[in-house]
Length: 362
Ligand code: GDP
Image (tube, rainbow, N blue to C red; front, side, top):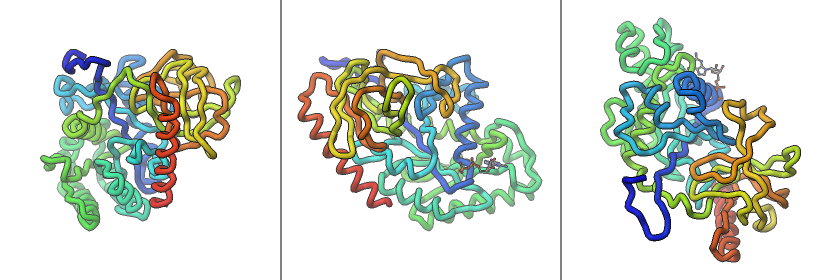
């Protein structure tokens, strides 16, 4: 990257922000992720969207194709967005990095008909505790009686094209959500009126069904990341990989494997790694790094593609001996040229922190 100042040891690069989707059951988390994945596949050139293990990467080009005039790729140097595929705050709570949230930003999905529900409040508390910036997707706008859908359109023109009655009806619901956010101590407004996304929560009306507002949602997430998180996204790409275990899985031909999200550095085949385990940190060696074959359905996919190395941010399956006692939510670190005992102690300390955090949010 020609924009970054070279350092004497290694290259800094901007990694992809990691996005989590949270919200009450049935408010549309899965549908929204599916819509983003689906539209990205249609809009993008073949292979532009990449399925990772446990995550979906939507590159800047594809975001820009989907968001149309809302995102000019020249305004951005972050490479895109990486969505964690497992929605919900239980996975969010478990997925920590260095005591903070694994996700850099979150989308809180709220059904416009249902408003705030118990799990919405739980999600808000977790976001508050982990100080994770978030935006609200006010979902299912298409269910407002009389709504005239405009497939995949940005929300403002679609909203403006509705009848006064329909618009008024939606406004009532959106202001109820803004009121609930205010009760929780957040200053919030329709996203197009928000200037400072660091101190105000933007509410984006969307429909995961018709795709309306999805361009806006992507544009706001890209903008938020670029504006407020660029420094945190600057990583030493060549440094030793650091990640969080999403899942521990038996895989035919590979034994017990761990699905991880890598958020810093690079992991290679044959690297010595330390993984948080039930009793103690596990020290082992990477036998294979596996990713799903392009465009495959990752939940059912059994055929993987082997890669030599992968850099953050990415979702990847790691096959290695002795992973039986590895734990979801545990840290994974490449040792590289660091002192092994030091890395083991780091993993041990991080694991203790995860246990405390999980109990507190319990
Ligand atoms: P989750 O539990 O939050 O992941 O919610 P789902 O994505 O499974 O959605 C719950 C139900 O709401 C499903 O029947 C979806 O088809 C429906 N749904 C989700 N988003 C929308 C939307 O924008 N409009 C409409 N009409 N239905 C939706």
